[in-house]
Image (cartoon, rainbow, N blue to C red; front, side, top):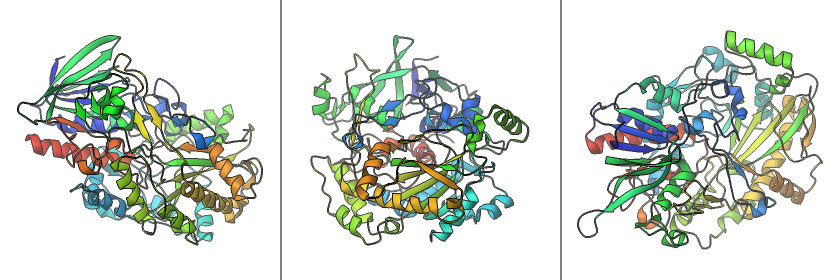
Length: 593
């Protein structure tokens, strides 16, 4: 093990392992990945798709962040799981491979980032994935794929769920009855409508993660070194030569087994630690807002005031219903005999309840729940106060999107199992359905900042969401709740419902719905924006080449660079970002592929 590497990658999650695999394709270049977790990406809690909930809150797999107490959510902190270990959150996520609309990807370029548009994203979506499906999939789910936007030979495996989700067909038929069109290929630039989503699951019904797809096939490379159990404390920097020269990142200081260690970087340091840890590491290194750094006695190395600002996430709440009779949902696994039979079915035939996770979605434009335009009018009049330029810029973009019905604003997903909510009690032997509602473009803006100096670097950052700090977001949730009630009372899906158990009592007024939303509010675990890719004058932290402004050799490649949240579960987009970043780095540095 050397003490100097050409490239040091901080974080062995989704983006970090994609970069490690791609950059180390040049055998003359040395690459080291520092990961705080361990290499544990092959056990049943990870490999078996339906076991994902076993990892949430488990310190072996999950860093388990929480937000600060949220005033408009009853003063509760919000649970924010983040994957820990080689593969990061690709080890614990729900495996959705949804994409946003072409409008949103093109908007990233229009915000001042040349080369970050829909066509470029499609190029790298395709490079990252191998999409496998059958004629039965197409016929069963009413799909018709545009082969020009799907990959056929990339590392990540993408398939359709193979298990018999008894809610899919009734839900699709109910969506039809409610006037929600079916979308034959939501990955082709228009994600509006009802559809069955593709998954990061291989043809053997096993989770496909960045660890299994990108790292495992390349782990024997002599020029690729992985250091696990490494908690990065700070980046080591020096002023460049000459007046006004960029800061040079010389290396990384980290803790391993309570010992302080240092690695030197001959070429670049790349932060891939995610939307919470990346701004924390920057601030511990003296890169950020001097007013934040000064609170903890950290000298300002680089004044970059948007670090940690402009935090965004998809807000969510759930409605849970008990189903009639003996319908086989995932809740059946509570019966030991069923669990044993399903495990045998999975082991032998790679199908059954363990082989996938729910995947029925309805993505809707704002107009679908705001019929009279009242919410759009009030949202268009919202003002942000005391925020930085990045938050203001992206907030204004969202207001421009209010009247654009080409993009989705709400995600309704239907889940064949009990999920806890206010008032909900699980009864053994019963079957349940949960409807999860995501707000894809909430107007709240939060922040992620350090809570201690480098003397105590293991303290988590303060994650302030400011959830539901405006009436528009809450009003959208209220109107979406009314649509959810139609799913629960209409058509074949409604016929399956015995009783709604969360909320426990019937909600008769908008104020009652608002109170339920506050009680049920959570995150969908899609944080972005805290080290945004924008022009510096607009509050950006990184340029279109993902290089941190004011530095010579520091890049950020993770969800923190996405300047405004998009109507998609993030992992497909992050694979594309990491693939594009690898090409940028190779081109700039003359590396071989």
